[in-house]
Length: 195
Image 1 (cartoon, rainbow, N blue to C red):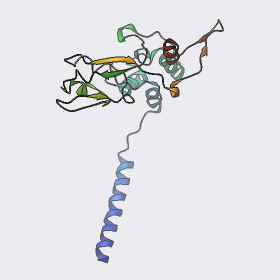
Image 2: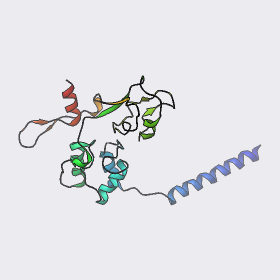
Image 3: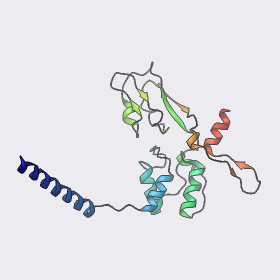
Image 4: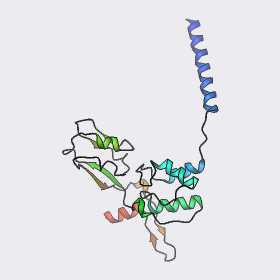
């Protein structure tokens, strides 16, 4: 019995040392600027920027392959934050990529849903729950509002609605340059419009 315990302990230690060595040897260094750009992007994974997700878009921005103005969900505030981080000029949102809109969330009409699973397959963040031939529903906290679930739905049972503002997303209004009036952020404009 003692021999078995000692053997398992020695084997566990050897495997641990081997894994530790492999982690150091094959570690992939991450570019800290790409990490900072990726943290600014909204993580909708919508593809409106012509990249398959926010991380590839961040890598393209840092490498100079893409402009900072290709993310409609990030909007003007995102462009400003990217310009500040990278020390470049603020550009207007590129209309070819879309337009800035209030944050939305998908809602599925569960009475109309036929359970085809096409929306589940299209969702880049796994925010839709359901199974074949059973109704589906959206986890609102996980939904990024990317609209990618709308085109594949054969019965048009998905609607995009304006997301209720989250108190954690609220920011103080910023003064506009020159006139002393305050400028509202996107989330504040949505809140003001709802009032």
